[in-house]
Length: 354
Image 1 (tube, rainbow, N blue to C red):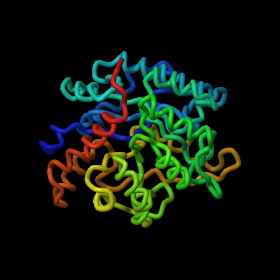
Image 2: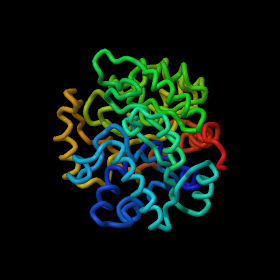
Image 3: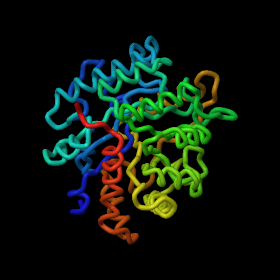
């Protein structure tokens, strides 16, 4: 691993490890799931912190007992319990509530976990839940997944609109509490509304440049500029379908997205996504694919869960560092990309611990 990468704070800005793997395994009686199944990969990638989305709008949970008889709120609360349980069981992982926790994790050689939501369904239209979620550790909040909820429209709603009145209130309350607002998966009109509403910088935690790949999950140039101008951060996505319109992309295509976003928004707006669904069991991939044909009468976009050569695992993150240095980015720039920019964002948005 390159010395620069090893010495840097490396923040994975979007992952779904706990909701997709830890939750149902602990529900089945397993323990130390993060440590046994995910720590080796994260260690190899030099990861300091994962921003892990432990609930939201998607049908997280892969056992019938954990999925079909529970609401989004129940699944989030159960997964939150399993999060604290798995962290408590391990000497190698630690909860992150503030930027000092990230610095301490780096010093102590631990892996920090930031609790995030990907979609507002667990709020059930109740703003007080957001305050309670913050008390329980929520620090980043993606307002929607791909579909409509009580906050606004996701990217795949027909004639998608923006934020609802409740969604606007949620953004304002996130600002007051110190929760980072995430617009990945949100409709274009919704992203406009967030930029107009939020007094804090925001993130698109796992989105690429639409100019290089036409997928609607990616950002047009004006959003790249506007997010950057407000002090926000954009994390690259590693899924093939969001990297290239053509099959078989490589890490070079990923690096082009990073360079393009840096060109349009500056070096202070780049971060790591990368939303890698690694270390899942193959049957889970199959289950997700089969269950994603239609949700709530809305045809679901079919994803092929493949990633570019050279960026198929968080263990491959040193390849990003090496590639960016070869492209001519300075060591200071790369440190920002790896974690410095997210540290700055978190330091500005998160409130000091009481």
